[in-house]
Length: 295
Length: 261
Image (cartoon, rainbow over all chains, first blue to last red; front, side, top):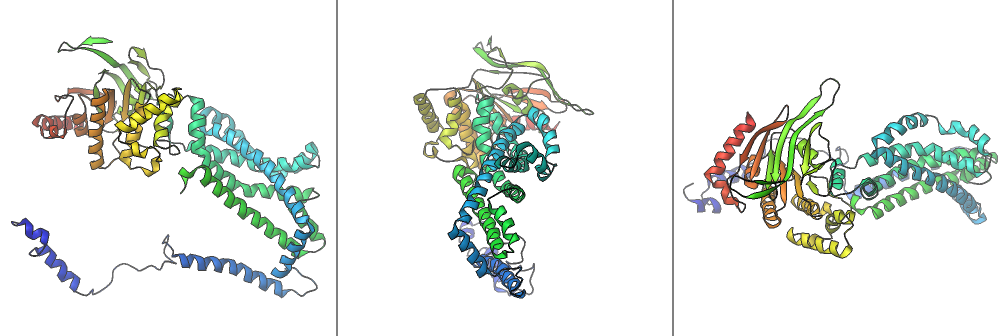
């Protein structure tokens, strides 16, 4: 260590000499275990593997479908072929019933679920922000949400008749308690220090609710709406099966009377597509309005 | 309240804390977080509250900030009784207090908007602070894109913006790595020397307390109370060289012993 220059150049350093000797010797055994990317827990997957597995997953469903369709004899079809399903869809499209039904269902969900989300935001933020609101509202909501919404159908029919309003209120009641409680959790996740900093910047209650808690909760609220939307569609189906003269679930029910399984399959696929599209839309919306929260 | 110091100077007492106790109620084991704390900070002073974790120093700061209420005792700022939080006592926390959806300039502007400053004055003040803090080129950046040290600078700028009577800092550099922490300490000294804002800072770091403050209150735990008041013998303009001053090292050992006892 007397000559610092020797260490930096490494020519006479015993340390660098050692390293060379170790590097030159072949390993005599292995340590640890090599994990393949397909089987390692949380190990990242290469892009081509992801694509291949994605195609495989969809393909698998199609194969099961085709095999199932080819088993029954033609006189009593229980599972239509993909081709027959496609034809049924095209027919409904050209006849225009698909659009009438789609719009009728969509409208009910839009209004009913819209009301549910709006109530969820207001009450949820109140519960998440004020201990008094939480004490007042959480016990009754915890009770009410365990009453199956579908069990309220006879009452709704009695109160509201057979037209649109019982369908819409069924969607509201079937989803609003989840929207409230999950929004409350989102509002509760605003860091305490952020609220305290707001107070010490002179902000009052109203300002903090409007300019701190709401913007901080917005991406979470959109996620809550996205997750509970499936329950909204579930309530719609129940309502339409019961009493309706148009709508996708109503059409499925009609198709059953004529044993038109191809039509039923086509409409089920329509449900799947609606779900997928609305999910993607709400994800896009969240990233659009709250780019700061992007994962 | 004006008073005369031993050297004959006339100074204003910015903050007076008298007989403050805090008991956190609990059915079986009520926690006595603070027991009869007295302290004061003069106008333009930089004072540290030093103590190990659990000594109630952050609770005391919260009470001064008006975020918590004292069980007994009172806090006066410029002879006015503190009953709640306000922009006159700007606070900076260890982390998680910047608004992540607002860029740096808008974060700093927040308190000015709340106080309804006219737009032109707001822009002027924000630009001034961005300059002082060396943040001008990051005006449009979101907090998530900033380093920890930069975020704390923004938090300090935001608290300073509405021209508070005093600044309360709750371990503001506690989450930073050693190198960044040193930079931020020098930065805080510069800000203080330039603005002469009254600063009360909570820390558990002995060297930080000596390096920054003119006076140190050492706190002890269970129940939280004042154990000592130490005058730091270095002037208002000091640099990193004081860390090699023998008095600095003596003070460090003395305070270390106090905290360990």
